[in-house]
Length: 468
Ligand code: NAD
Image 1: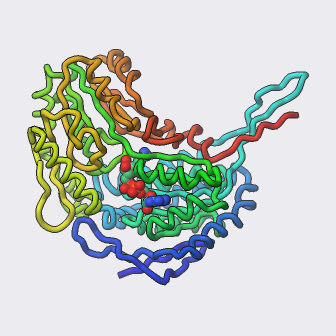
Image 2: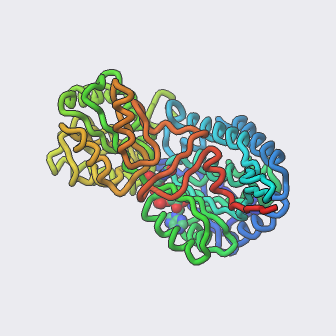
């Protein structure tokens, strides 16, 4: 079984201790994660700090070329990365699974190479010239979750190095191996110390978020951990981007066509088995078409294959870990106890692996965990409404504010409803389709700051106003 190494200052560093990384489909060991010590984490931060002056002094064009070269290299290695990702994360190779994720990693990396933050002239008059310059922050800590580990690592790392920062990345202990491999690939292009990876327990993350030599933390994960990160970073006033949990609502208006929207609704909710920050997690459907939408969704779900991700025609895999499997099981049990009507699924699968069937629960309302909390799994609550004001109020009645969607045959009407939703991204007749040129981030307790595009790039910089 292969034991992976840390990658610090361009070199593979052996750890004294390793921990098993398990395949969630089979329970077998995929590989062994190095557990970094405090000294090794300190060494990674020191390497990034030492690499910063030279990397930040390079021209923007130079760094753009390096990021573009990384995109090409990830693309060359995409099948190897996809297989490793399926083994440790569980998602299928095909469909919206591992190949899709690695394709996304390439697309985001390539787009990040193509954008820039040129000097802005704020004033040029006889009284004087004022320029706004963007400067890199220093060492950026990237802390990533287990749902889309490779793509999210690229969302963090590429804008950081594109703008001249150096990075220490810490992946989730559930899915560290594909990130280690990604950082090895990146190190074929960038100088030693520019991108380092440390893996291990949550304590490694906590050390990064409190360390005085880290200038910024980019964190993607749950809202409770996001609060800890913010608290820990406060002593040294680090810059923060926090991409946290969501509980996205979708509202289906009375004029929508149930057959036409069923596929979009399904994948909006069930992409990556619902283990997606901006997945559709609560569906509100107008009373007049409620049963038709329920039937259309159940009929679509009946043809979706769930199983081991290495089997090519499976479209969904298992849940990634025991903790998530237990959360989904508990929330569905609670929903059924509160009178929810099971359209399909409804109970955990028996046997090996964290497989949970596609579950649709109708006749449910606020007050059940499946509605009020983030299920992060393949179980969708479908809530009936009669008045649009009621639907909007319920959609907004949640501390999260990541994404939302409105489904209708009338685009103008849908846009008017969309503007009333309290969320950072909103889609019409689809859900969760993010892209590298549009800022993405949460409002309310779904986070602080945005990623992607020039707006996202700015978050990896500080401003310097130059008065001439
Ligand atoms: P998590 O918060 O448990 O862990 C995220 C990362 O933080 C892991 O690398 C973990 O090891 C690390 N960590 C844990 N404790 C820490 C601490 N005290 N200090 C520093 N780091 C620490 O989240 P998860 O379970 O891996 O991911 C699922 C959550 O992530 C869901 O809530 C989901 O909605 C959210 N998410 C959000 C987005 C987004 O863009 N908004 C994207 C993906 C996932």
